[in-house]
Amino acid sequence: MYKSVMRKYARLTVRMGVNLQKKQGLIVVAETDQAEFALMVADEAYKAGAKWVDIRWSNESLQKLKYRHESLKVLSETKAWEKARLQDQVDEMPARLLIESSDPDGLRGVNIEKMQKAAVARMAVQKPYRDALEGKQQWCIAAVPSVKWAKKVFPGLRASQAVEKLWEAILKAVRVSAGNDPILEWQAHSDALEARGKKLAARNFKTLHYYNVNGTDFRCDLIPGSKWEGGGARLKDGTFFVPNMPTEELFTTPKKGTAEGTLVATLPLSFQGNLIENFSITFRDGKVIEVHAEKGQALLEKIVSIDEGASMLGELALIPSDSPISNLGILFYNTLFDENAACHAALGRGFNETVPGFENMTKEELDAAGVNDSLIHVDFMIGDANMNIDGITESGEVVPVFRNGGWTGEFL
Ligand code: ZN
Image (tube, rainbow, N blue to C red; front, side, top):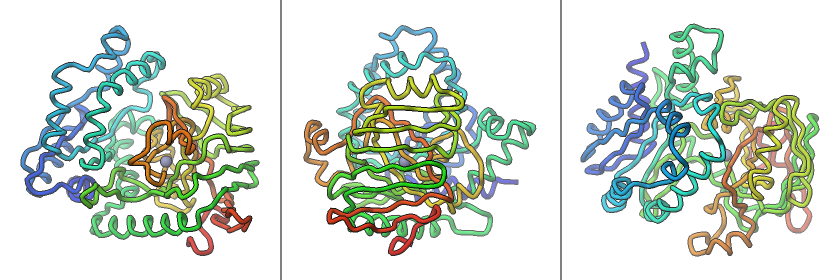
């Protein structure tokens, strides 16, 4: 029943997500159980003029076996053929589409430290290639249901019903329906996000103050001149693409060391197959000094102490409580969706690209500007229909930004 709508979605990821150019190659990364959608994407890519399409199949169960049985040394290696593949991407600049369908519990039981150490080692070797691709390669992450994911989101339903329900939810979230032109909708959506981001940046707020009846009372400074990113992105040559589908957020990197007060979570946090529920995090001088969780206290304590940066913030993101994803009222157990359902903050690594002049700054300069660094970047949701946020300017003017969970004043 969904075939025609599925195809529309596949077309959207090609034409709007990666915005594949004529005679450009396309790398698709997909789980082995997503062949049907991956092949639709391939077909749509050829229709859009792809020079070639290469699907790289992955399998989460195999990944888990690898983490369990291979040594850290082996897991940390980047093989010669992987480097050759990366070099090939740098030379030819194909677009890259990741089809996300992972089981939220797929890595449960895996040694987190081993996984992270291996990832860091591989990242170090692959960084020169990634840097060479940055700003030149269009990429996009979009999601399709797997049985395990769907059963996690809708545990009471039969597998086939759960998958159907998750399809419905995903298609709503990515603005694809039987009767619409999703490409036009995405253009308007992305333009609106970008315009609002510019208005926020133009105010150059020194501090944001969050407060609501849940007990959140929190202040954090922003990096002077910082940008609010959202919607689509542009390559250095101006080519437009949409890195995340869906996306509802405007985000920035807050100034490290300035977080003060308490954030009360409004949604559970799913961390590698484990849930942390009804929790709050309190900061002083930019660092976590206290966490409280009705469920998952020990895990939350562990997360904030993985490394020094894990106890500081790397992201603040604003999303109105009246948005297509939050209106679904579903916990997806997947950051791509859940982080777009509510205002959130992230513990750990910040984004360089919201800092003015980041292209020409060294790691030390970004550090000094206030960009936090960590092995982790963990989003947690703090927004709901009660959220109020004020922007405070350098001169002390208090400007309402959010009232009762939604944009207000000039930001409406
Ligand atoms: Zn975010």
